[in-house]
Image (cartoon, rainbow over all chains, first blue to last red; front, top):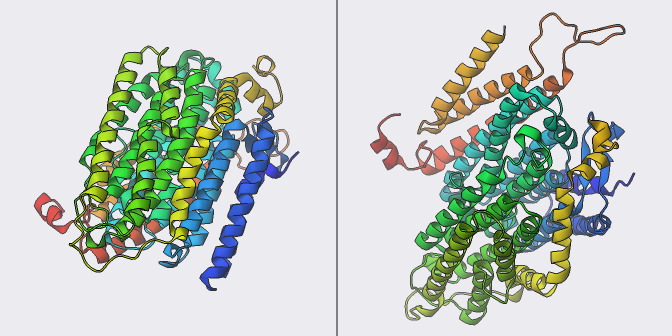
Length: 506
Length: 116
């Protein structure tokens, strides 16, 4: 049994404990530990991706307890891809944080590693209660990271964020109670088997539980009407934390893609295809609400936070179409939207610090010190976020729309996605002209300090990743297609985890 | 027994949700705690409610309680306790920094809202 799979969980866990031990020492030591651990995580993630790319599922039984009784970690294409995305974005966020944010409060580095542990664990686990535990780990770390740096705005939105997520955790537990009470198992593969054979009264109860679980995942993903916590929280968070948080909503999307096709997929008897009819309208409504938010935003930080919600809407639509091309498109769009929005959050900080008191408010003010560099980066980020060619956002949306053509709601999807793209373009162009073109050079205090190349590097690196997704679109797309095919193959998942074929297990 | 447990869960959820919807942070935290208790009882009941069974399994035993929900509840209690402590500290800190314990952190809004 290969022990590599458990490393993305163990490595950050040990690094976090080590960070707690060295936190009285200088920041340099903490940064050293942080970078070593995150680079090692990246290396492990690359190795796991190579292993998963062969197409096999690798199952790791913790404590070697047999499958439905013990907890299993399952490595497949989807989890390997998301662990790699986590490690990459985390490395960039850490580079950005090491420019000074990590010193504005204690425990930053320890919380950062715990956050990575929770994210990687959630992506790898094959047990739904274990998924809850890893959710809690990543949320607890995020509560701390969100208020990192202090200040009234962070505390205000942080408190709401914590309360909302704690309520969602209660709902998660209630859903798990229903799952265990009706099926007697919490292992995802075993659940898939048991759900298919449930009788009428239990199936009705489980239906409620499954929809409750969908609500919980929608809170994490920030879907309408459960997204109101996000814009305030993300806009208030410090820039490196917000860049890392661009991943957090994707955990909700991941959980929907992981749990619903597997447990409530085509073979689930009375509960088959539970989620898709809900997801498409929810996604379209989320997208529309997010566009309204982008148009109404008066600060750039809030505007970018609404872009996160818009990407969630698009992802939910693709997940709701649920065909293999649609899921593959969702994965491609997930990759690109995470890196682009993360880069934009980091860019907002650079722009804000060069505009004096106006910060990131969207009104004409003093000119930034580097209109050329910041303007170009903003232009690249905005184009990628809206989905203009030739950047990755265009291909992401193209794949989603192409897969929507066969869907029953094709007209609605095309209309809403295309209209929203147009409105996003208008909003981002207006914001850009307020920030860069309508500047009044005479106004404002002393000339701001230009950002150094090292300060601009994290943004540039994430935007470069977006360009890389276009250059390598062929391999990435074929990987995404293979991932979608693997996700649809429920029987193979059950066989890999339980060790017996579907027919024999029933 | 079932009726008692079910109504206890129901009352706790109702009280918890009511308090969660209040405008001040302290009732909200209390509501969260009550909702947590209800959730724990619910999880506990998912292993079926049985009375008079031995907790330790020995040879030749035909009936025994399901140990898994108890382990789940223990995990949930630990997480819930830790989170309640954290959210209390966060609420106190917000009260000091914002000068108000309204959940929106805005003293004027809270005064207009009326109800404490």
